[in-house]
Image (cartoon, rainbow, N blue to C red; front, side, top):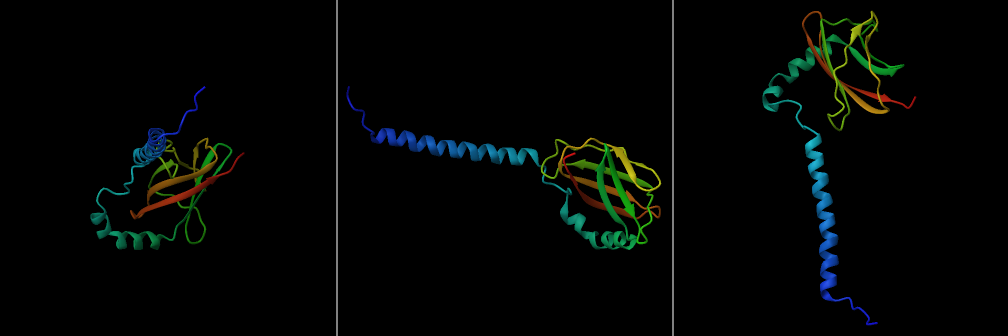
Length: 153
């Protein structure tokens, strides 16, 4: 039986094949990253920046503290004032989702129970974000991203 030699053609095929795989994987990962994350917080950042300081100062003047936790199939969003008393808002909109993609995004149906806002949500373990916008009873807008860490049950 004749011994096969490793020729320049063989080297070229291995070289092109190896780099072809690397390039294909990089293109796939780049496409996946762009396709799964919208990347926009606001439509026009310049316009949003013009009133940022005023909105931030009004929001900080409320003195609210916001926290969230998940327990027993319930998602609990707690808003308290400077004295630690529960705050009831005139309007609350929230989007619950993962920090890295939008496929798990949903809008919880929060109801105020006298102490906090509660919604029925079954959450998988891991990091979640609640992007909330609320309106105080005096009309002051409030926006915050609340980080929620759900542990294994």
